[in-house]
Length: 361
Image (tube, rainbow, N blue to C red; front, side, top):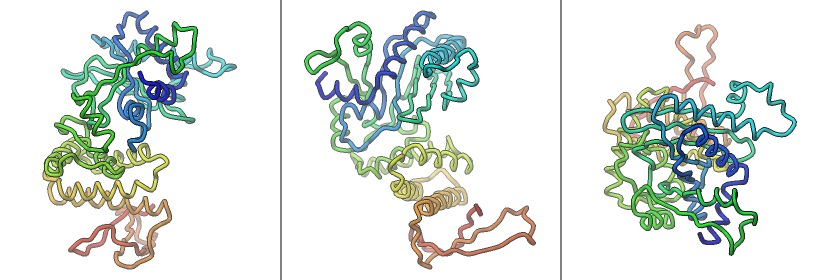
């Protein structure tokens, strides 16, 4: 690989992460689970290939291509990872007193298992308070491995792992392993061109959980442009339809939006409002699968979250165009109710005037 790639690999994957990957791989193989290769995936791989894309990355997403032929294999993978975590605890920690449940609560942010006709994989997300979270994904089969072309890259790390195991000399500009990059989008050159020029391109978004809708709005806010405006308008409808299939309940939608805003805009909190307004526009223009009241309910939710984001940033303008009424829950006794009115700037132009009910919190 080129020196710049080697440097970025070292920057993006620290020594402890490489060591953890090596230990996990070695112990899985000792337990009889074949590991075909280990890959850096998604936005982190994109960052390695082109650091100035504006895409950024929030996690280190590592894929272990493994054989998961039985239910026992999934449990074995989990047990191996938990055992490996014990070896990476700070010195002085009494490991004998740490139970698997304690270890899970302290370090594991998320556990996911998918097992159906087309997909067999599991995910163990490790939290890291001082840096990027590490997501270990163990994949036997996965039908859809990317959302958009710019996050479709995978870098095979086997040579890097082998180098650190076998070489007595450190890497240098003239002495380093070669790594291979691939694009799950299909055409590596085309995907790299999209990454360099901030172009949005995808195919069959209905195959993506959530339709890629939130990632699409995120890319728009970061200055990426659709490869084809006409084609993207059509794809937007598929994105919205799949999103509302996966998150049909208004409560689920709120939890998903809040979680996405929290995790994908660290250090870019000011962009959360822009992302919500972009989402509002896309949903308003491209949603064809909801009934009228459901559509209005979702649009009101997005608007409410946008107002909250502005309030958190203390930048709500003091104008009187729109009045938001705060109404208590129906079960609250009337005698204990204090109504009040606050005036905020309208979020979007609208042809009808109606009060927006927001939770009093």
